Amino acid sequence: MARDGAAYVCQGCGSVQTKWAGQCAGCGAWNSLVEEVQSRPPGALAPARGAKGRGLSFEGLEDATPAPPRIATGVEEFDRVCGGGVVPGSAILLGGDPGVGKSTLLLQVVGSAALRGATCAYISGEEAIEQVRSRAQRMGLANAPVKLAAETALRDILEGLKRDRFDLVVIDSIQTMWSDAHEAAPGSVTQVRAAAGELVRLAKKRGVAVILVGHVTKEGTIAGPRVIEHMVDAVLAFEGERGYPFRILRAAKNRFGATDEIGVFEMGDAGLTEVKNPSALFLNTAGERAAGAAVFAGIEGSRPVLVEFQALVAPSAYGTPRRAVVGWDAGRLAMLLAVLEARCGIGFGDRDVYLNVAGGLRVSEPAADLAAAAALVSSAVDQALPQDCVVFGEISLSGEVRPVSRMDARLKEAAKLGFRRALAPSDLDSAAGMAVSGVSRLADAVRRISESDWDGPA
Image (cartoon, rainbow, N blue to C red; front, side, top):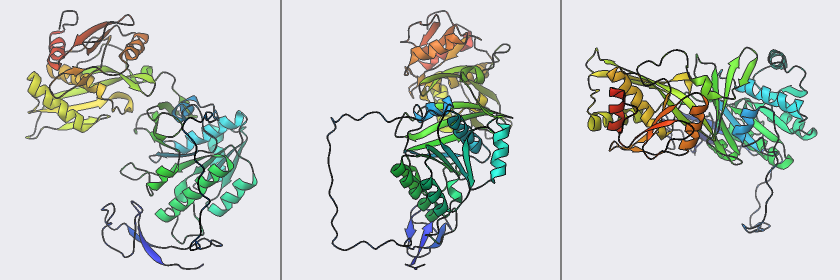
């Protein structure tokens, strides 16, 4: 193979440098530059000097374009996140922590789609065919007409996909693919970029939907160059906390649908089970609500989701109080504690603060500010909120409680689960048979919680 020259490629960001250095100039990572031989694929020709292109054919914005067709896989939570199904000719990148269930999810997707008439293939570069079959039998998909293969050579995979016609193909995983056109090791930036580029090109040319499984780094980002996320049409993240059976599928990028939808699954012995009503799953409805707990009525994509915020405020045994948060932004918690101290007179300087979102769900919505504050105040004054009360609202630095989007939908979801009152922004009228305790400032909410005043004026 012709050797065109060597370059040093950063394994973190993919930047190419002409000489080795201890620190990458692109991302600042140390000892990440690896020498890789840059070679031209066999049979490829050097670009001719002075060659002219064919030009462009422009079209107007007013031209009518039909909506892209969809492949309904039968896994409704997966189809919801993809925007209603998988688009033929699209490339999807799925990332997640080791052991979270990426292979289980995709085997369930291709098995369900094959049972519905789609021609599907599952190509594994990490497991043998017998291992994939064993998992399929455990999941009840032994009779699904899915074509299996165990291969890592990119050239052989491309030839096999060109020879047969497929509607949906899973590559598990992109980091194990190896192209003989490059002398870099499998999993390196050069190999991952080359393999992803060839597979995406095949998807666009032959109209087959390709799903690539991507490993993640210890920082939680997909391993390999960031250019892969730009090449594909959708980037999905499969999340799950250890110790919890729940798994959340999110879309970080989607050219054919919304990016704020989530799919909720429950991991069991027979694989993943779709959760149709996540609110009932994340709530503990047994017994009285303890001090330090507040139910937040949130919105994830197009669906309302109710989740419980749990807080514990305790005297600090050390000179520096601890601040620990799970499932919420730590910076947002620090800001909320400062607002409670400055605007409401509740001191946390000598007390430890712990905040947890129950069920392993991660909440990033600003509307959760009031629920987190209610849980903190409830624990600080040792006064429980009513069992049938939900809380939502955004808090500003001035202590004002601001309205949030889709408040009516939040109330309707809460009423469906038996809640009868809400602590919410003051410009919200009672709806869905619920009594709304409107507050315009955080101090009003603190007074209601401390005095258990839920019926009087703010």
